[in-house]
Image 1 (tube, rainbow, N blue to C red):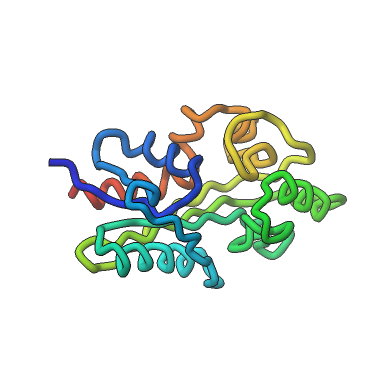
Image 2 (image 1 turned 45 degrees about the vertical axis):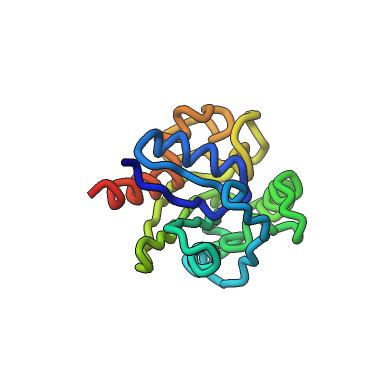
Length: 192
């Protein structure tokens, strides 16, 4: 019998991405599936903290094994910003377009374009907490390129590639992304 987990996210893109990576290995439930429509506040000042807040909320209120993630784009020349504030870099509206515009504006005239995407998953299984991290290094483009993906994908080129995440399409992105790396670590742990 497949193990069943709740993925504590309201982000349909993340849900699709993680479901595609996990495949048939586990049965993944969304917050909608368990009738949770709470927008769980992300008030921690680290990715680890936010992932744990979301996972603990589901575990404490629904008593189901679950995991949650938080992801940040960390730009070297900006001292790691937007980091934990990536989703609300341009304001509380979680507007990807506005976030990208603000980041490109903040990067104007800056030669050092190095950045990394970092995802942290917090898993709670049988009441025990575990953390898994995935990092992809790369650089910020000067202009947006590509139409697939979400978030900052049109302005991030991963190391070793010439295309942004938004240009390469989901199949390749789901093999090499920060979320894929963290999800694979989570999956290995679950299948042990």
